[in-house]
Image (cartoon, rainbow, N blue to C red):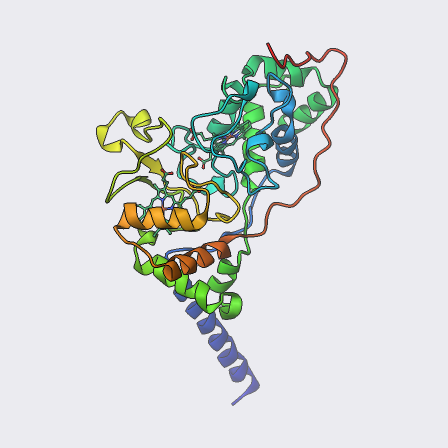
Length: 333
Ligand code: HEC
Ligand code: HEC
């Protein structure tokens, strides 16, 4: 064989191997998370500050990170969130991690995308309880913010569109690649234990993947909660019907992502399930009419824990100080 031919043969074999891996991957109902690409870095830095800034709330105490804590899987780990004046909200806070992969935002999908979502909590009386006008007033009064907004958006005045764009751009970076399960998908066959792999096979053969699939293992469809038997919720939320008005959408919720699910307890839109074994048991019974043995349940839970990826990691932003002209918060009025 000529050296040139050997090289070609090696290259062909390598590309066949790659194609093999790709084909195997394509055959799986779940795909790996890819790191964020093509983000505007200036906008991300600004959005990060806004995400952590409690001055966007009436009390001066609540930021996006209060309920979507990036040290706790992008959630608050409580049943339903606590907002302005200690008000307990009606629904569990979903994680912001990988939320850029959702087909729409909120449990009922009422916001089309992250930008449309980001304006909501600031003005929601049960969450940050501010108004967009007051929030802009605060930002305008902080010289370093004024400079940074101008640098990023090249406009003289700050507006709510810029605020929500920047927050959404930051949220795009909150993806969690490199989970052990993704390493397995990408060909590292020893990345999963035998039990975890058995759990994944149960997840597939039992039918969980009908709703929990794609890179986010969910987030890409609305489905009924309680397909086989009704779910008794402890929250008044009715799901997708609130958006479409169609009776068929009653109790349809966005299928939550199962990425990082080990970190995002408690579970379900009403936060009623405290543990993963409990959530898996409910899903088996109500969605599929299946009662898993303790051993099967344990294996599925072991698989779900392999979906924890690299958590966002960055320097905590230092927020620019208020000026003498910055309106002060009114915590208890
Ligand atoms: C007081 C707690 C609280 C605060 C503060 C808060 N959120 Fe939320 N967030 C929630 C709750 C609860 C939901 C679910 C509401 C629903 O679906 O009806 C939610 C939903 C979301 C979602 C949708 C995720 C999904 O999978 O559907 C995103 C994204 C989000 N919030 C981002 C933000 C951002 C950005 C901020 C700051 C501007 C913020 N949140 C402030 C509690 C909060
Ligand atoms: C028919 C679609 C469907 C099937 C099948 C299904 N799920 Fe779900 N899953 C959902 C929906 C919808 C929710 C949210 C329900 C709610 O909060 O009211 C959910 C929620 C969950 C949650 C809680 C996530 C969170 O953050 O709150 C877990 C865990 C879960 N499913 C695991 C499973 C497992 C394991 C299986 C298979 C045994 C399964 N699911 C089968 C649709 C489905």
